Image: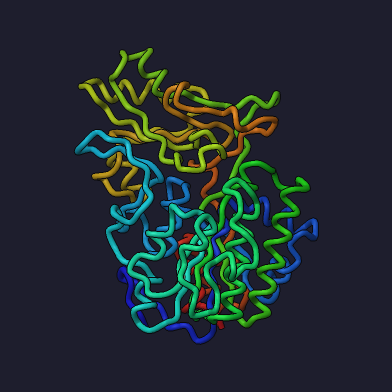
Length: 409
């Protein structure tokens, strides 16, 4: 057994592949199975386990990928968004490395225990966290040739996969990561591998769209190949995805910092959008959760009451309450947190958010409570105690390594 963050994990007895399918809302899974788009995943209802779990709040990529590979919530690992305000310097910072990480990872511990380990992520911004203290193969679809694969006979990831680096805004960014995982399974034969994709498709296309079906069908075929190669495949997501536009296709947006400036005076507060990342064309840095940092003394109760009255706002919680309820690190939260409802996004100032890249597509995004439910799938049957736990308890997406390593028959 390997101990990581007060949880125990068995050494892999056969190859284990854990996949984080970015933005894979349960609606994609349910619709895809019903329409025959996901035959492999559909078959796992009888030969494995297909259910759902809760993602970590805020439902953003960095937060949840970190929770998945550490097995713990942000209160322990410290990564509570893609973007944050440094309280000491007042600087707004995008998370692209492991400096804010406060604990080790399952992948790092397993590799140090002698398990052959690999990570391939679509988004390079995640790599330093996912591969933290890990000995093994690690690279991204964005920078595939950064990997030293000479021992396998390849100059880099492009040679391994057999095609060039994909465009950042493409379905192939994700498929490249999955194809790299398959080629690694065929060549390096890792005992434990983590594959993380991009949510480009899910931001652009709703369940049932032809482009969505094409992509998810391609993912399903790659999962089938990994199973064929002898791997136990465990699949979850970092967050769901929801439509955030009105009947005419106009985004439902609450520009919160503008509203606070108008009501309480300019410069009284700064609104931080933790969904902001280098893939801003997906969503214009608009999501379902923001943090409000007060810059001047004010009546915080009155301000929170005003925010609660705004159309599209679902929940407003002070720092202590949001940290207790969603297991967030108090020293890295704002003075209060704001959640939009499932059909709305919340941002800072109108001038901070460019939605021109959406074109004719409706705004689809995540970050709030409406995108917390995600799939939780394993390719092999669960042990009785784990099945009972899945059916009677509250599963988290960061339980996926526990189930894959400890919970299958």
